[in-house]
Structures are given as C-alpha cells and as structure tokens.
Image 1 (tube, rainbow, N blue to C red):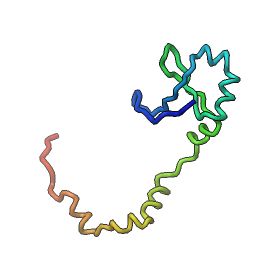
Image 2 (cartoon, one colour; image 1 turned 30 degrees about the vertical axis):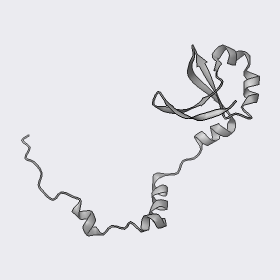
Image 3 (tube, helix red, strand yellow; image 1 turned 135 degrees about the vertical axis):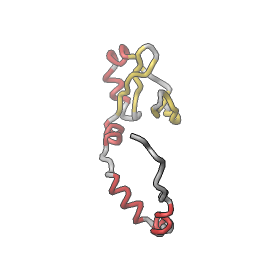
Image 4 (cartoon, rainbow, N blue to C red; image 1 turned 90 degrees about the horizontal axis):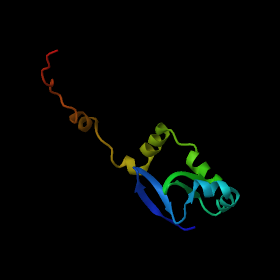
Length: 108
C-alpha cells in the first residue's frame, strides 16, 4: 500500500491511501489487515464509501498519543535559542505598543 501526500478533508488532515476497506471486509479479514499494519502505518475503514475509522499500527498509535511538551517548556526552549536572542525588544518599544488613551465613553 502506497501512502500519498496529506490532503485536507472535512477540516482534518488525514492520510489518503490507495486502499480502504469496508467494515464488513474488515470484520471478516481482521487478522490479515492487522498483519499488514506491520508495513503500513494505518488502514482506512469505510462505511458506504466514506472513511469512518482507521486501524493504526502500534508505532503510529504511540506516535499519536506520545507525550507532548508543555507550552512553558517549549517557550523556554524558544526563548533560550540563538534565533530568539537576536530579536530582543527594549521595554520602551514594548510599552509603545499599548494605547495610552482612556478609550471610548460607555454608558452602562
């Protein structure tokens, strides 16, 4: 089974493959399909021609559920990188971004 490039579908990024299987076929041939997951990351399962689920290999599953970095850890890594250090901003520049006017009048 050849994996083709990513394609945007139903607002989700899904991997389009050459071959998908109906639920009935999957039910009747599950051992063969599970065996084929050793060489394919995922197999789409269809109902009436529409993909409704995926069988995924253990390797793919572990990658999908893998531990994600905390935002703060990612931010610290970015902040400490050389690329980030060359774009330092002065306090004066940052404070100039804020509008110092009192804003509009609002009657409550």
